[in-house]
Length: 332
Ligand code: TYM
Image 1 (cartoon, protein in one colour):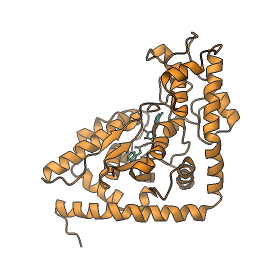
Image 2: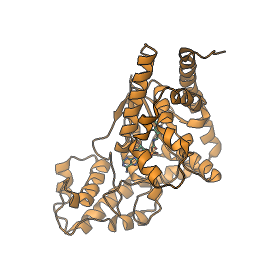
Image 3: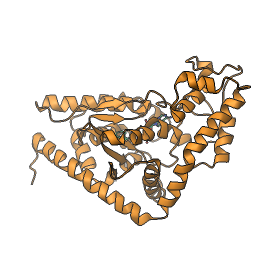
Image 4: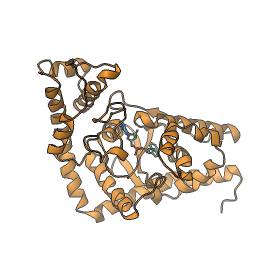
């Protein structure tokens, strides 16, 4: 059985992009794989966080993932900082990864350009992520398009470690990028991806906890173009319509022809926007209800997360111990 590892940051505002690009695919493939899903709180520290807010959001994200359908009987769900091997092993990988590899990362370049003072962790972030994956010998990493480069770097780090210590020690993982939903764009400007950091901006994102009225309002305000044609298209001026159709396709699971047929009688983009909003509202309603229930029982949430941490630790710690041995450390 293939082993899957993926992660998501508890920085609040989990949105439709996170859901369609990653979480939905984790849930859908759950029965067929051995799964590790990680709430990567250590990654969130690479930009300044309010401590109480981070603590709250970490638990809230656990509840949200369970509400989305992650089943603790089928998948190991855990908090990254509960498994010490992640931080410990990341140091070891720091010592075998060239600086230039990190400086080339697009996300580092984008994020650091927006900040006055850049934390070292923002640069070394992809090493922590590589460790997440390879300490579990994951075969597959289901992520949205924006994380593909980080998974490719993970492969490079694993291959270089294997080469240097001349043994096939780490499994080389493959990024699994969904065919639809891999890059959900912001509704307020389809040139930029929907992102957590902009999710509080009016009309940018659909957050999974948004009320139906708010979801409808955001879709109705979505930026499109001055034409009327409802078609899938890569043309830059059609990016808004393409994004709406992509969301509809990912949510309904229909093929392109059926999606277009559903809007054959649309009187313009207004009908398209309402149609997309309706399927999203229907999809999110049960998730919001389940989330509410789970958040009412923090003890149960903690119990499930403790089980997840124990299971994850049993895989990752022996791997990191073995890595230490290979690198020449005295392991007690
Ligand atoms: P994060 O928390 O930013 O996002 C979680 C997942 O959501 C996907 N995603 C999107 N997909 C489609 N459209 C969008 N607009 C969109 N925005 C985000 C991301 O690609 C991701 O799959 N570094 C990772 C977390 C991480 C990780 C890992 C992932 C840490 N360790 C190990 C996989 C394996 C991140 O910040 O994701």
